[in-house]
Image (tube, rainbow, N blue to C red):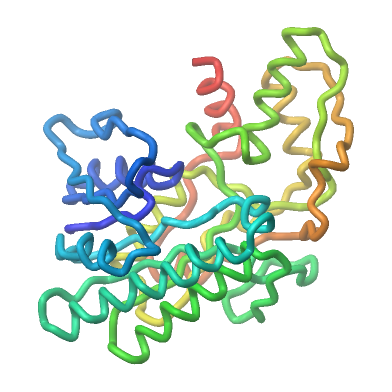
Length: 317
C-alpha cells in the first residue's frame, strides 16, 4: 500500500511508520513544519525510504499539498493528544482535532470525486469519547458522552469524517484506541512518568513517589499492537464504521503502578498529588474489541508485563 501517516513524528506515528515499512508499504510522513527530527531508518528494513511531507492541519492548502502525494490509504494521527493540554485551551484542541480532520477528509473526498485516487482513511479517535459510562466494557454502539475538551474534540473529528463518507463515498473508518503505551512515549503520559519518578526515587532512596488518582480502571495495550490494528483496518475495515482497539481487560492503575515498581526494584510508595488528579477522571474505561477482531483477525500479542519491561529498558537506555 501507499500510505500517508499524519502526525508521523509523534509517539504512535513513529511506531506506525516503522510497522508499515516492515510490511513493505510505501510511506509518506506528514509532519508539522518545525517539529521534531526523526531518523526514519531506525528499525526500518534496509533501503526503506520515507517521503517527509510538510503538513499543517490549520492550512487547507498545506493539507491539499500533502494529499497531492496521492496515497492509497491515510492514517490520521495528527492531533493534540494530551488531555491536559486540550483542557488548557479547548479552542485550540477543536481547531486541530476537529477542524483539522474536517480539512483532511474534505481534501481526500475531493480527490476521490475528481477520480484521482480513492484512499481508505482511518481517523484515529479515542476510547475516551464514551465518557463516564458504567463499569462494563464499552461497545461501538454505546452513546458518545465526552467529559473532557480532548474527548469532545475527538467526537467532532469523528462527525466530520463520517459526514465526508456519507456525502462523497470516501472510505472513512474510525479507530477508537483505549490506553496504550510503549517505548518512546514521553513522561507527559502516566506510565512513562512513573518510570521516571520510580527510577529517581530508587537512586535517591526516597520512600515516596507523587502520583495522580490510582483508583481508575484502565485497558492498557502496547503501542505496537495498536499500530498493527490500524494497518489491518486499512485492509479489512468497513467504510462508515467505528472500531474499538482494546485488550478488553481492565486493571486498576494502582496495580499497574505496583507491577512497574516491582519490575524496577523500587520500594517507594505512591502518594497522591492533587495537581496530578484530573477533575473528570473516568472511573472505568475498558473497551470491547470484538468488532475489530471479527473484521480483521487482530489480537494483541504483547502482554502488559512485556510492555512495562520495554518501558523500563527504554528509560535505562
